[in-house]
Length: 109
Image (cartoon, rainbow, N blue to C red; front, top):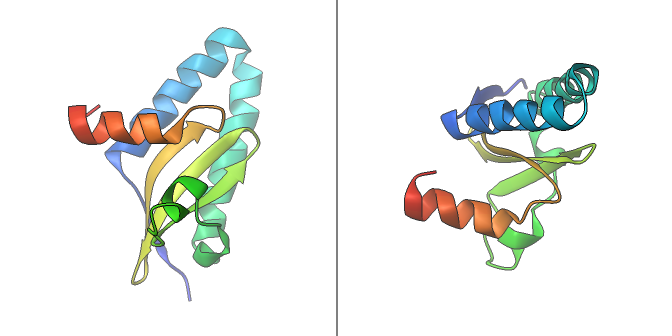
């Protein structure tokens, strides 16, 4: 079975922010490699969406519909509903996910 993958607006903005950060602090070449790895991981979700683990931040709250895949230093947080994978967050794994999610919920950012 092949799942549909939907990159939500929040994840698209995350990619733009991540690109800006990597290009500014490292190089375009590093961004291209990072982006290629992220795209590959997203393509894999079409076939293996349940292969990701439940993020600790969600597991502690007994929320099990969200999963994550780790790509280098980045996390892709997604939700599987029926035959669709919704990608909510693409973030540097060193960032505090709870703070990021709280900001999005409370401030729309």
